[in-house]
Image 1 (spheres, rainbow, N blue to C red):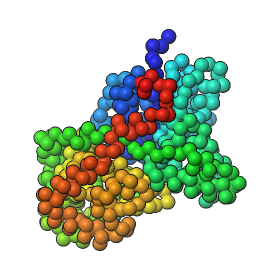
Image 2: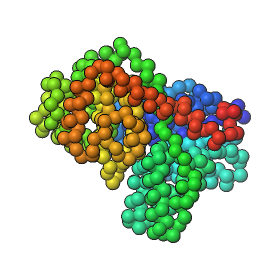
Image 3: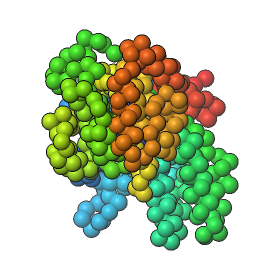
Image 4: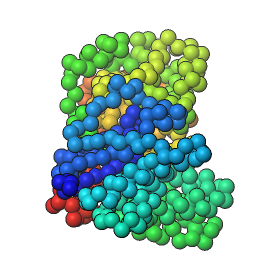
Length: 427
């Protein structure tokens, strides 16, 4: 007989996936243990499946360990070659059914609707059908790619069933949230398009039920940076404080790295200032070729192995952090977690665009440039490098004060308070 009083189950794309919501899952798990949950289980994908998926992954040896009481489960696929697809989702769903029927009161939080919320919804239905005691409260958190990847493409192709599956499964959860106000409005707008085309009534329910829950960031890692360790990181990487422009995110077309390279080329910057492009992703090869053809190729460096421990130090020591994201059919920046992390770390200013939910992440504390605008990026880089130390310090302090609202404990408490009144941990 189990002695657990309560449990949090998180279903997401967890480490080593390079994704802000992978980090968010970790941060919520750690906070749940602090707040009194006896156990946290992160149910995610086997490593071999992640490696074959094409998702950008961190080197395994750079992934930080989870705290005590947090268990990462990677269920094996169910079935053999006669099941051409769905084997891995079946493994996740089956494990969730086991967790939902073992007698432990459970909160199940899914990040990304497809396939994670779909798996949770199916697992709850199966668990209830077993007749075994089932005490599960579900929370689904939607990000923008849930809509752009599935719902909008379904609308465009006239595939009603796929859009209905996503929206109905989302709304079947006890509590539904979106990572930004922008994302919330995007979901409602897309649901209205489904309604107009197919005669459904999803949009009013989305309007009524969806709340905003900003991504949870471990602010401790960014506001308490060890200066001596920063110097060691810079030495290992051959970098100098305040002498590099930093991009640190996924290497994909929507992140605007090509525009940043163009802006760096055109900016009148001191000759010892480098451009450091840190990350991995599907656009890496193209960006390498673009940088190699640049007249400033010798001053453009790529880092593909930056781990969780190094990231705050690289952010804090850069002269400027640039993420000129732009909307693309396959991806829109629904918040911009890396931008808030940089603001927490301090150091040089942030340059970005007013795309998607970025304004919610940075407030008035970033230099905003238009999308697809290398010339504007060049001017912004020049202005950033001309700031005095006092101006940099004042801007950094204001930016950090704004970003502290995304602290994992604050976000966790707002997400759970009033939604899980029966949980002893939250009494």
